[in-house]
Image (spheres, rainbow, N blue to C red):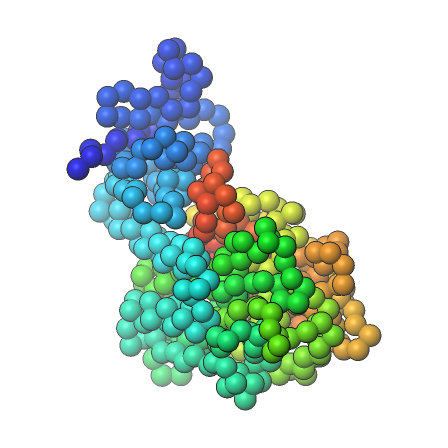
Length: 425
């Protein structure tokens, strides 16, 4: 078996013969030379460089490897393909904490990177439920509502978006209750689970469709976060709702000009079938609101506008409550993840007007027009209980179309740790 390369951290510059290199080598050891600010970013970039040089087996060694440094190295080192091996540094408790993170991240990556053919909506819901059941045992109960049963229970959005596929849409309702009896629900989680997004009749171009297997990243992220929190001893009741569908074109697919009447009475004109994520999340947010949970968190790969606004190294966050935004920023910072708030005012609810319904699901212009991420959040706000604290996370940083300086191609899991931290309080 190939010996692992030891990787050490140093604040010293590389020896003169290495020039201004940020990595140097001596024997079986690689040294990452940290200079200036952005220490964690430098570590992640160095991990990507090591991996791109064909180094597949490493052991973190020496001083400076706190939990954030090791996790950031791992984020740069792992790839969608197997064949890599990483040994943690530190005492047993630190190694255990890192391994728990890695187990959750591995699950999220496997789901998100899976081919759309191998991950139809019902299977996504089933895999998520079974994994959480494995972790939570008899504290976890769930049911999966699929196909025409969605209509019977008035989950209009999930059914409409998914009815164009031969493989039925589904909603997962999962209850983690470690307190027993009729304990109140503390947090409700909602995840967008579009297992493939063709854009429907608002058909995407081929290059825009290629990586749309990642459009269930919100469902994977909230599931991974809940699983990690359970592994860390979560002792509060949490309900999870995954809104799962394939957005395909067929004779049964929903069409531009259709009007959907939701369970809460809101009518929505479909002006863009590629703005499907908010249509399924509307059902999930209503279900979450009905639990009475004082805190509702949803996560979704919702808009290209969020990516344009904050890039791929941040997730965009929205809430009408500034205290919720500050809490999210604090929790993200505590686990070295990045979030950035974008505007959300009451008038954003009305930024997608319709002549035929209470609202449209977008604006009939390319990309939804200016302020598209905030307008999408405003649409979702219509389906959240008024007295609930609500955080919407637009997962701009959860997937990379191609390998870059920080991440390999595929799911990044960025957002899992933030949500897991939010579940603690």
